[in-house]
Image (cartoon, rainbow, N blue to C red; front, side, top):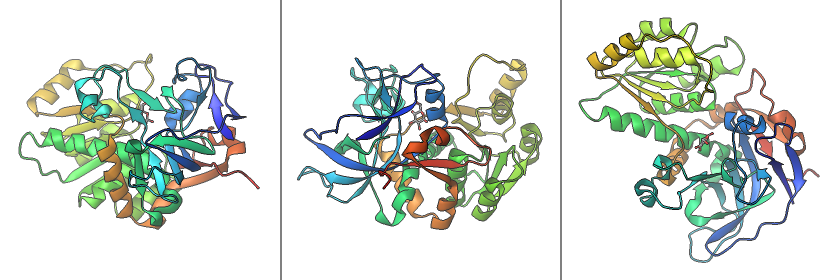
Length: 352
Ligand code: BGC
């Protein structure tokens, strides 16, 4: 069968290759891969900047945003042939740390976790894959291929859970949220904000393409312009930062309302600095009881929450997030970002 593979660390190595058919072990599902979502992490791996193959192997099968149909399921696990499923990305570290031992592997303390399609485990970018049933999440058939959005939505559900946990340390009834970045994570974070009845604002650097319209169709407000000015105008109670852009991150941390919560979800590359007035930043955080919290990955509960968020969303709006659908043979093209992309997905079904 065919799989999308590469050698981590080698920028020119992305290739669709024939790989052995997977076989489901005890407690595992055999799944037909339907679609795979592409995100910034995949592009970093393709660029040779991130990723690790499984121990003893050179190549890694890419793909952590999955959707597939169950071909074979054990009798006792609650899954049936034909079910639509998404595979969870992370697996606990082998120690395991206290968090991993409690199913909170998204909060792993020793960093020795593995992630499918990212670090130390093959991903879901193949015509067939297997997954332990404890790390598979059933998707409402009504969602169809949009189930591929469950993984990015799980990251967002986790981020909101962090905001709730941090905000919940005192009286917390946020009204206004600013989401910085109108990519899939930003737009899904805005969706959750709208579902919660908040006054939602989204900031991005592009003034045209699909993003402004997607934000308006949510009933949220779209902003373009320097992040500092927008922050000062809005004084949001909550910021979900999804750009990883240095100045935007800094503004997001330092210009919230009193008792503001800033949740950072964007991964930036290190090495290029900007000047920061650390005294002013510290003063602002202390005198306003502000919190900046980083959030990555998601555990099984967050995936279940994500299926609920997507089930409650307008299907046409969700479909609008998928701006390109590309066959596995054109994977190189899918992994090259275009300015108008929101979510690009790869069709894993064999072309006829
Ligand atoms: C994935 C997360 C993962 C992170 C870091 C993200 O793109 O959605 O599940 O933990 O990359 O590897």
